[in-house]
Length: 310
Image (cartoon, rainbow, N blue to C red; front, side):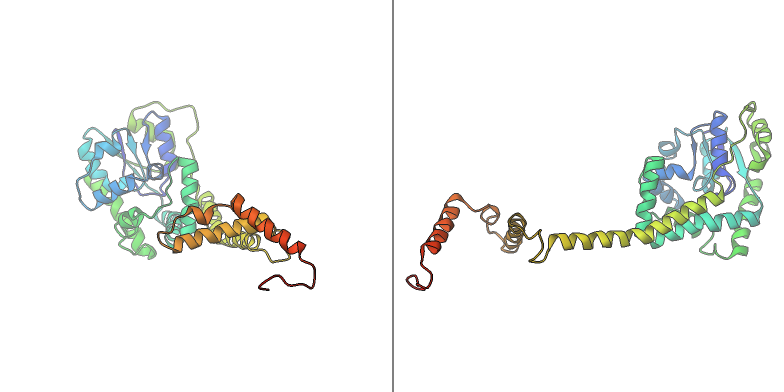
């Protein structure tokens, strides 16, 4: 690994990921890699708890890291990669807090509170990143909201204090010759000079705008609220179709036979070890012949007379 990102999320880390990959430092590990590889979440949580971590097994194919959760482990990554450089991405603390509160934190709360939202988010991540990230995971809470901000992220003053303390610690612990404190609005020049590579002709990437992310969260919220209602309407329609009234055109012999089969399955299931086939099989030729004979007998009986035993 050549570049270690020590800056918190929402400091331009997605733009920085793309920029590093454009400069040849790819692939770059970002939180989105956890979406693409949901199994990585357990690795990061175990590492946060101080358990043995297979750094090479998870990060061996990456040349750079940015964003959460890797930024919380910049010291461990420096030990694993002694020749690497450290990139501390920063921004104005006030704007960082508002961006984080209205995007990442808001999304975390929504996913924690709604199974449908997790399902929608998981399907979205499957389409975009190739991995289903809709299951419950303690990564974000354990490492970020509880682990880093100690459950007080909604306290703006406290959260900004933690943010500033983290940045100060990085500046204090990383040797100056290995560290670049960087804002993405500075563009290519300081980044390329620090990494010793030429500036590309392409403009510096500007991605993951907070307003765009907030729109995405709104879509997930709306879908999570409306899909259950749509499913309930669909279920109601199915009930009407499967249990029609006596006057319904669907109350035909095939439909009655299907319902009879269903009742047979239920009786078999509730009867323990009774064989299934007799309950499921359609009327045999012998039984149909017998019923036909009885019907012919009834038609042959003159009106007003009684059959023996009647």
